[in-house]
Amino acid sequence: MYNLHNQLLTINYPMAYLIKNIKKLVQVETKPVLLRAGKDMQTVKCIDNAFLLTDGDKIVDFGKMSKLTEEVLAQSKHKIQEIDATGRMVFPSFCDSHTHIVYKGSREIEYNDKIKGLSYEEIAKRGGGILNSVKKLRKASEDELFDEAWERLEEIISFGTGAVEIKSGYGLSTKDELKSLRVIRRLKEKSPLTIRATFLGAHGVPEEYKGRQGEYVDLIINEMIPMVAAEDLADYIDVFCDRGFFTPEETERILMQGIKYGMRPKIHANELANSGGIQVGVKYNSLSVDHLEHTGPKEIECLMGSETMPTFLPGAAFFLNMVYGPARQMIDAGLPVALASDYNPGSSPSGNMQFILSMGCVNYKMTCEESINATTLNTAYAMGVSQTHGSIAKGKVANFYITKPIPTIEFMPYSFGSNKVEQVFLNGKKVK
Image (cartoon, rainbow, N blue to C red; front, side):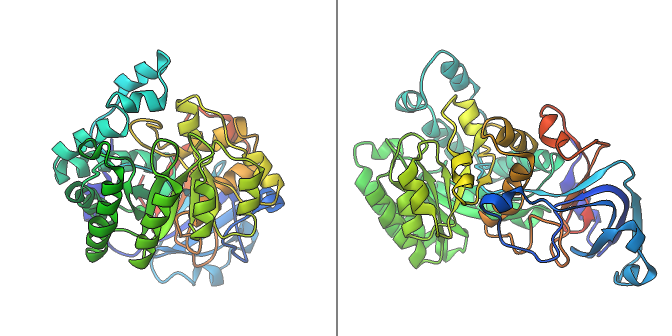
């Protein structure tokens, strides 16, 4: 695979690009919004026969080719490189607001157990699941974790992702949670991706605390969170609030401590049962509540009027053969919806957001436009970056990709098995 790390060593100066003769420039905004909800999720503004101009790491201008003048070009302060996109479309890069990319090894043996009929919870009780990844991560060095995560970042860039949230949660000890978060910090420093870090010490209860869950919660509150904050390692704090994991009461205690130390909540909620996690998330103004397979009218009502983004993870529901959450009902009720990959070794071993876009349409009955909003602008909101990412707008970060020749925007979710991305630009630089 082409090594972006090597490329970054050579490309470190401001650049300007003119992408011209674009068949369709997708998801443009003249008055940017932070998210789209309800019927507005049907809105994806496009310009046919368009241009896009960047300078440095920002989008400077865009419009129809007939509006491309010398005055427009003069807005760029650097020498302009031209790219002819005839027959091709330009989309804003995907944002992926929920991943667990820092892990060691894989768990395909458990995949075989799933095929034989074992549930996610049954595999976890046998020492598999999260605890399997914990054992592997604890034995790994920071360099080993960084190198494996770097390969995964290269992969998701090639599929069109430009911003990603990465959680800890496979350490489940102070030492190893800090190790994971330090790896994420290194990835932030080296990668062209926009990265947000989330502390997920409450991803499960480690083997050494079996039968002593309350003591582990105390460890998270009294030791882990202060030490994570002392090194400024996390933007957000997360808890797996679900049946067999952490209770709403335990979740509240952890979140309150995280908020005290400046970490806004993001919640794993309602994946395995109607757990009360959504209500806890809304109560503590979580940026997002994620999974949501087991969600009813009370939870939908709770989300109405909140600032919390309901986020579905189609890859996990697909891989675990679970029920699909009520995205259609939420949109019809006027809520926004985001989609993310949940890239992790146990329940969603893929970060391909093109596939997530397709599953939004196929499995969640979302229109193409709704699914585009859910994988760009709304999922940018769910990781706190929609002011700068998730759409094509003047002043936003120049994260976008040029497709291969495709006939319509609907072809993106329709052709679910192929990579439609031809060129990738992140922070105004061509990286693929």
